[in-house]
Image: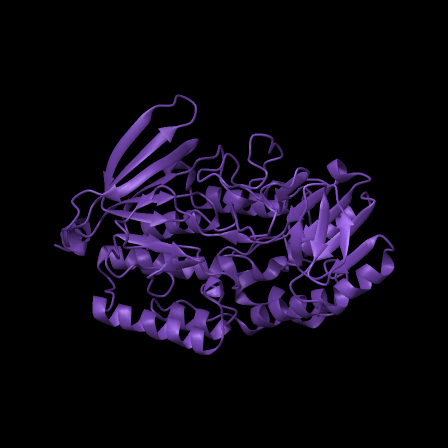
Length: 459
């Protein structure tokens, strides 16, 4: 009798993307006895962490809806968070002999961690590689959300064969670091010299001896500027605020060819860049380190889910569109969180909703909750494009309570904060010099690190 009940709640689920959120979604869905297919446009797992050196086919400003290149990772990128805090709850990000053993390793090491995760939980067998999702739409528009089915059309990138399949549910796990977010600057469309978004930046060499304007002082903007200043003739960072961190200030003081400017007023056809304070320079290149937008060019929800100024909505708890959930859900939309454990809690909730173990609140309650959330953000003066920036451990813990997911450990929170504080003061050295040794020991002796009984240790 029990097996029949489980059987009736076993769904055919399509997960789009085999990055961190797609992989953990596949694992949790299988735990709940769902039949899972993961569609991945690349040749391997990793999503954003699968480095792509060749960006020649990509539009430098990334303005086309379907991108040729998914990853925005540059060659020298190292993690901005210590490895100890990054692992999934039951799969610590351990140091492995013969690999990058640093606390803040390169992007390659994180890709290897995801491959290890994939092998350990035998996820490769459910992934279809080199398969680009072209269209996702409702099978019978107008039916009750509990009876919704989805048509997924995908293209095999090698054979160009088109496949259409029907699924009970779709989990969108396509990441949020691929669609460039660009500023609107007067003269941008007619400026004749080189302009690109950091999405297509890989190495500093092409900027050798150039005068480069870097727009934006995000962590990647800072990292890239530090790298460029060694090869470029001059680096001019344009920032919305001149109130910069102590760490960035130290770097600028150290280099005679590194300059800080306010926002750009306009670009002239002769290559002149004019700033809002009236100053100007002649530049060879402009590099926009201005972040990323959410984009789901394959998804047709008949307007029930829209992206408006980087707000994907309406979404209950950043995951569920009230009119279409739980048959349509999104994993990995929140930013400014400890990503992997949060994605894991999202995956568990989705999997248990689809199996019938959990039930969402009513449509009215979900919409009320969303409206209250929007209102609270507005009242706090938070712009719409920051809707999905969480920066709140308490929120993540409360989210996890929906499925009994363990709260973020004290050491994990403290290690996260100590890295942010150190980076703020010591931008060039925070990945290699730190003073949180006691916290680190506490982490390494915690159940999170001792649970698998593995010999390798992050010491």
